[in-house]
Length: 75
Image (cartoon, rainbow, N blue to C red; front, side, top):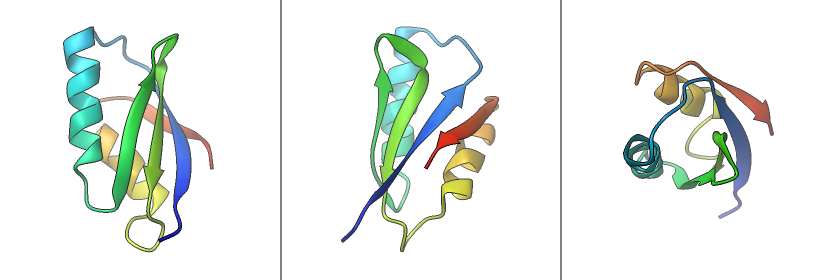
């Protein structure tokens, strides 16, 4: 399986509990391999995914579906 990765910019300032819960939720989406927030730049999350299973736009929509203002900043 080949993987891709994207960086998601999250506009909201989430506390520890919420950001780590978000990592877990995103990691459990079919096609997502892992999701990890950068501890020094908590508004950035690296998401590794299987491009044969999920599109980057669907990952972004999953953040927005949780009420967050988020955008992809890298591919």
